[in-house]
Image (cartoon, rainbow, N blue to C red; front, side, top):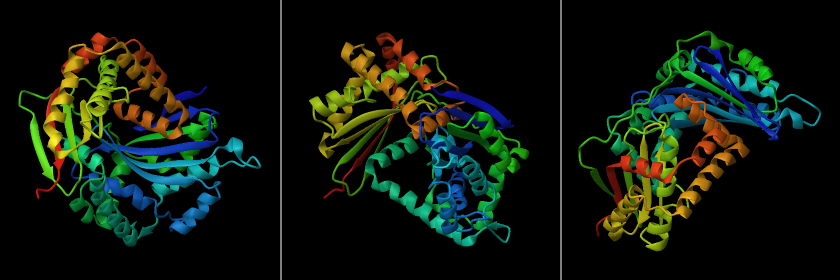
Length: 427
């Protein structure tokens, strides 16, 4: 059994601890939560990568690696995520749990101060970030942004989201854009970093066998400068209904051998904050969110219209995004069949096996998060970004009570907003 606690260390700085003896490793993350905005997303995304290059005490990767080796080969990695219209940036760290050290040494007393140094005491050059580190990570980030196009399935979903939410913060990529990234300087990045320290909402997460009080004491010492400053505000997410306009259709040509068809739906205002959220979750699972879904079993398997077909739910923004890979000449047939499967749910045409299979798949997935430290951290970060405190077991229990009629009603609220098709070059 695990015990989840959450406490505020300072205004806008929160610590969540999952006290458990289930794992042989401990997992720690420190995440800045800020509004996802076009003007600041590029610099925000770059900051954890530059911070990871070195501290005042360990000014290069070689000395940092030696320090991590002394923590039984622990790891600290930069990470940038997107939760609704919130950009989440910081570090995730993994290291051997103290219960499993060879001679009873405390890894926690070494690991938490190191994370604190990485966040708050970077190696400096003339009072700002080292120029060579900024240039190196800036070039790496530009390559990272450019390389997103290589995964055409993910790229199609990214393009769909940006088209659907043009003019909305959700349409901004979590890594920012290439032009703004290329324009970052050591001075501008340092100023942005100082602003993050002052104003960003902070979520700290720990999972392991250490008592919560001990973890808190170590963090209070390691992050003392962070706790002493700032007026922090919680980032909000704007939810927009579809409106009366007809769906938008966008076609993009590229040198590809397989078409990518993506459809974006607004949920009619249903989000994770809605009482109907469990029904929306199950509706998405029946539609395309599981291997027992209508899209998978009918559009892909029975009709062979797609190489793959699935849907995902953006719980904070209120979006359902359908992703499929098709032959170029099957775009109209595939689109109509995807919409027909949604119409079937709206009409209540869901077999008992479909509904229960989707329900069991969802519940199993939530229960499985309890067996993975990284998935559990991701889940709780999503809850923190939404300002919620629903445990995976609670959500699983709520899903047990969802009826077919509630699923049907959730499906009725879905409105087609945008259709994006990535096709090949004309010969």
